[in-house]
Each structure stands twice: as structure tokens, then as C-alpha cells.
Length: 301
Image (tube, rainbow, N blue to C red; front, side, top):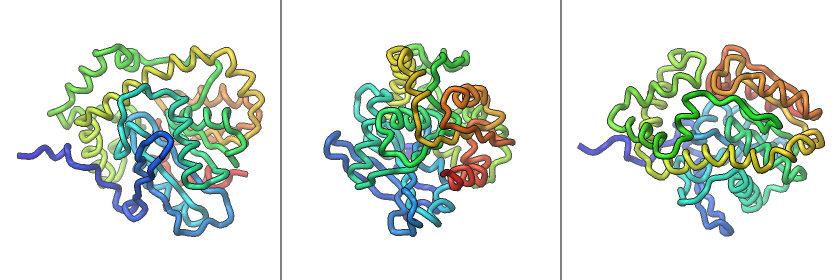
């Protein structure tokens, strides 16, 4: 019997019509994206959605269509994840930031409304610091740069250890229920998601588990983040204080992965940022409370 988790990842049904592949000539990478380019843009800057660590563009399945009623929306699989190329390399914030800028150049987008979730928030924040002129505004969802070291859970420390994390990851292969159970901490209550979502996530997390390329990218990105922060810690505070890009900091009030106090600390430093808490949500408000997330993005100025 063939392994059902080694098949190509299928898009969330309502997003399939927007699927395409974009070649980045400078980096030589092919990125999978959802792009509503043929729909109304409403005269507003396009929205680019960046997913978090170990996720894919389908995480925005309830966000893309509402936003696309008024503007172009692009959601990508970051390199190393989902259906995009997975080169063997270091997956640093600098690398991801460069990829976002190259994608904007290839799509001929001069200015964008940038939205990032979790790791995607760190990437989006990095892009904003390096290329503020390319952003009309910024939305950070349960993830941002911080001038202070973030608390790291015991489970995260475990995964940071070379080989140990990979052994755990590989150990989920052949145990689909355990792989699905590993998602629970990211939600306020995963059992409250619609049945279609739970079935989709069950299939998707097991597809991730069986991908060697995504495993390697996951642990590289995870381990590169503290290295990047240590190298840039001294410069982060003044750069955040000076960042003038209008920023909405959206945070699940019950986030157990990155607590809301991280967002509160940012808005105390970055004067251009304001906090929008999302109630009845854990680390994945774009899935648990998508209407509130859409509203936070749509009301940016």
C-alpha cells in the first residue's frame, strides 16, 4: 500500500484556483504561491501573507478570499516548506527577507501590505527594518522581533538540540495520531475547529512529518533564529524605535507558544505599532478567529 502522506500537498479547495509557481531567477528557487492577481485590487497595496514555522500558505484559507474582495492577495509557501523548493542551506531571517524582496521584484510590486504570522512575523519585521520603503503597512500576528530575549519553552529547547529534535520529528512517522496531537498546543482548543479543518490538518501535519526537506528546513530555521538575534541584538532597539511603518500587532490572547506580553513589549518600544488582542484564540488566530484577523488587516491605515 502506498503511503498517503507522500503524495503532493493538495491546496485547501477554495484556494486551489489561485495556485501558481513563481520562479525567482536570482536565487534560482521556485516558490508555490496563491495569487488573486486577476481579482479587484480596490486601489490599495497588495497584501503579502507569510506563514509561520512548519506551516504553509493554506494557513490563510479563511483570510485570502475576504481580503481579495478589495485588493490583490498573495500567500506563499516559504522556501523549505510546503510545495516550494527546499534547498540544503541555512534558513536565516536574512535569507527569508531577501526572498520576500525578490518575490516582490519578480511580481513587480513596488509597495505591499506585509502580513506575517509567528516566524512569518519575524521575517516581515526584518523586511520592514531593511526595506521600509517597500511597505505601506505591516501586520505582525503572534510573532515579532524583540530587543529582549524571548522565553523559550522546554519543548522548544528540546527541539533546538542537534539530532535530538530530528529524532523526535522522525519518530512521528507511522504515528499519525501523535503527529496530529502535536498541533494541539498551538490552538486554544483544536477540537472546536470545523471537522473539515481537523481532517485537513490531520493530513497536512503527517505530510510534513514525512518530508525530509521540510524537516531539514524546519530545524535550520529554528536554530538560526537565536543566532540571528544574538548577532543583531545590540542594534534592534534603536531600529525598532525609529521604524515609522504603520504596524498592527495582532495577538491571540491565549497564545501558549508566544505569550501576548511579547506583543505588549513591542508596542511599548515601537511608537508606530498598536496592539490588537484576539480573544478566544491561541497561536493561530488566522484559523481560530479569521474574521477578527481580516478586520485588523483591512482597517490598516
